[in-house]
Figure (cartoon, rainbow, N blue to C red):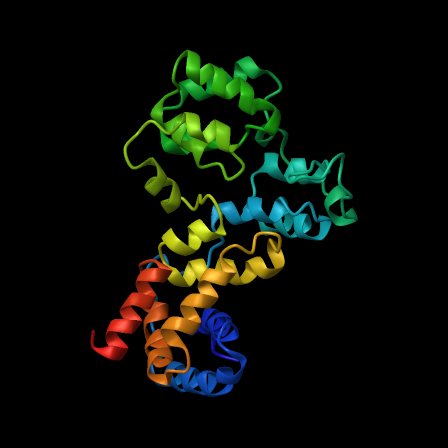
Length: 277
């Protein structure tokens, strides 16, 4: 419907949340605005990368088709991909999941990237890191069977800061394990910057780069349909703040591709620009 390079993909999502009777004139005005004001350069961060937490919300659906999407994406660690290939559930399903043939037959996983066979070796490697790059390389090898060992070792003698941070930003780090790493000021804010959110609603309220957050929430309709908690509040924002006001929609289409703050802040800015208040 709209030119996706200029934020049209996310604008389509917002228009779909408007009252049905308003959508046609709104869509026409948005198309005009996007055509008249193309974005030649997007600010850093407005790219549409998937937030780290979205991988886990998707996997928690325990849907083999969705698991295959995450597996193929290239954004998951080798350990996470191995757990997908083994059919391990991430949500409430019991027992092994069906695994698509294309995933089951894949053997392109390097042994040195998979989990440590020896828990003592994992602990030693975490304690030895001196850079964030090294910490991420080790943390990516922590499997679900290892989190208890990791947390107990950290409680006995805290890991280096780089190691604790690299573990905390693992998208599949269990909540109970991540809570143990929450020992520095601004931990929640820093987690959000790394793409770790408690829920889609948390992403809607606090995710920086509104275009990115809206992109993830739009895809969530398919990728994590059992987590719809952000849709009603977002629909309410659209209908109360934009409604059938074509001037407000034009400002939204203009600001969205350039906006570096949260979705609620974006709606506040649109209100100020369109009403002068």
